[in-house]
Image 1 (tube, rainbow, N blue to C red):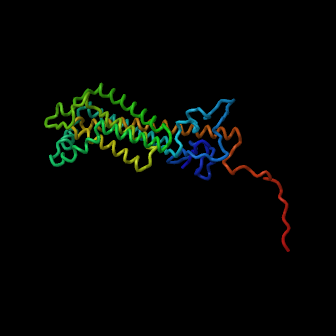
Image 2: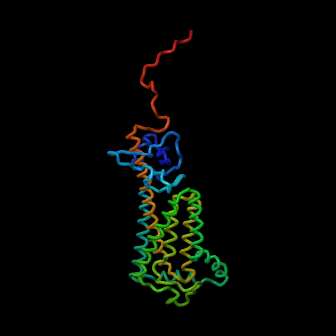
Length: 314
């Protein structure tokens, strides 16, 4: 693991064979971290000027850890290959769902809908109150609480910006797909479908609630503790279930929405990783320009000089 350390731009915990000032792309690791720790007397990112005086990552730059919006505690970001895999799997999931809808291979879709929607009365008496947690009001409340938490935890608005961009992109993609697919809601056409909320607006394919919630949950993963990140993903999955249980979406609509959410979230993770790498490389270039190394690595003033031998005791 490589650790990008805060305003100091210092990396620790790199493999011994790797110098800490080498670019992040040279280090094969599963996880890259940005650590908001200031190392006394070592501030290479401030007023960094290289390449003919061009400032890189200095104060006021959006890629500088000194920026007011930059997180002040460790941020875990999946490496580019893993984030790209998340985005690619999401795109594939949406593509398969759209293909199934286009070809009409949806007999399984209607069967699963009946299983999840037409439940016994005893089960419905428990599941219906639970499903209210995943209605728009519940989603907004959960997102608001998550925003307050990540801002307080990271002392930065970057998590909110990442979540907002993810939600916006997912919402736009969903509504483009809705206008093209134009699939009616199940309670409008499916015999025996039970509608457990107010009639929904728009068309059925894909599920916008699922897409937006999952996109935001994935975008916030780097800023959350691992247990809370897992809870966020689980909440998004339950949002998808609730859309079928409430009677406003088919399962394939939820799968398509999940695909859009995964693809959007993966792209956001890629963007966050790029920002962190640029900040690290800015620190690397500054260190190369100033000749600075990690704290405590400066050579002794007498390094290389012949030290007088001390007389051996008799």
